[in-house]
Image 1 (cartoon, rainbow, N blue to C red):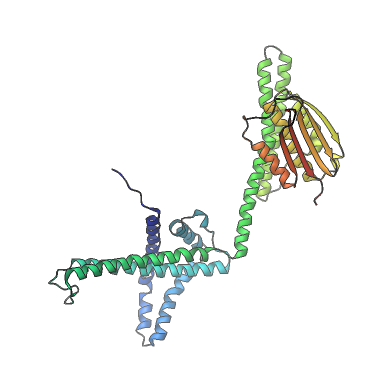
Image 2 (cartoon, rainbow, N blue to C red; image 1 turned 30 degrees about the vertical axis):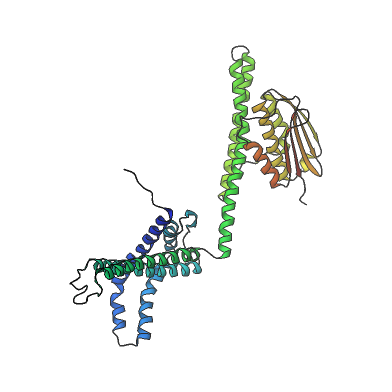
Length: 405
């Protein structure tokens, strides 16, 4: 059996009808409850110009009160997103301001009113169209009332009435599809606050991803290198294998410290600043280089300027940049000789270069490290250049402004 999928336009039309019929069901429920007070008003002898507005007010007031409930807004938002707009991002949270309660109440009134009208079109219009088309020529349509002109006229009227029902529902659905998102949306200040909150969440996730990659990833790279060295040396040189295992233990311990720091950042994002481990900075450069040397890298360092005088944020980000550079050396060119130059002045300049051609970090990585370096430098309005130089040596050059300009 071949199933023909419905077109997007037809699917949207059906979804809008479902939204309208949900409002029609609510209209029926409220109509049963409010029928008596409306009838009492209409039959009270008041002038129609006064009785009709009062009856509409009696019907609209409970609907608006239901719409003013805090949890009505997300329910309406879910229905609008699923059936009218088709965009899940249009879903909203509970009402927290008087303006949101008022707009949601108005939307509920419009939803139920339009749904009741669409339901009436279906319940009255379609059966009438069917009766028009099916009535015998000799009989009457409703009692003794007959439609002149015979079957062709009745069929044309039936088709016209059915088209009017469909067109009326379509107009009501399109109108609500255009109006509902505006009523559910907050003010400009609320939308700006929501956008800023979303950006803050994304920036926090990106920050945590960088910290995990640069800190824990560095330590795990050391663990991998040292564990491999210990496996190769365990029979040939037990003393060297023991030293590699000891270095593996130290690297794993540092990974736990770094992980504690990242978890501290998570707690900081959630408002709990207790227990956050201090982030390392360039004052810990000697220890960082020492771990790389223990893992087999031959690193020559040259430091100029006062690293202790650097702003804390610059020093922390520079540490992570150097850490990622050394991690790439260990990951892509284990045992290679490299030179690290750190110069603190008006700008902080970091240069990490290998001492031999052909050791450019290549495909095994996913490119996240270099992207993270550029993001860190960009946040501080710095620059990153990475790649082979004229002699074929891989060079990482970073410039970070020390003072904001």
